[in-house]
Amino acid sequence: MGDRPRYQLLCDFRNFELLDRDGRAETHFTFADLTRHVEKFRFKFGV
Image (cartoon, rainbow, N blue to C red):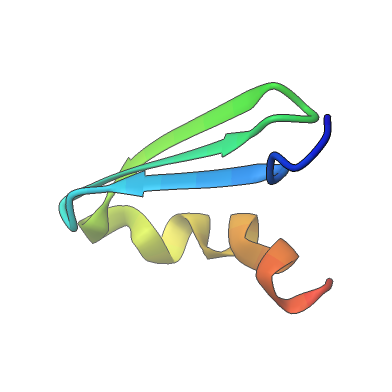
């Protein structure tokens, strides 16, 4: 995949879209639902 990051996060601070380029998965959620999706950010902490 070269120099492209595996994960990409897009947001406007109301809506979030997390893309996993290796797994080809997309997760869409709102800021209000962030606590329901916090486990998706484990990659940031090497978990």
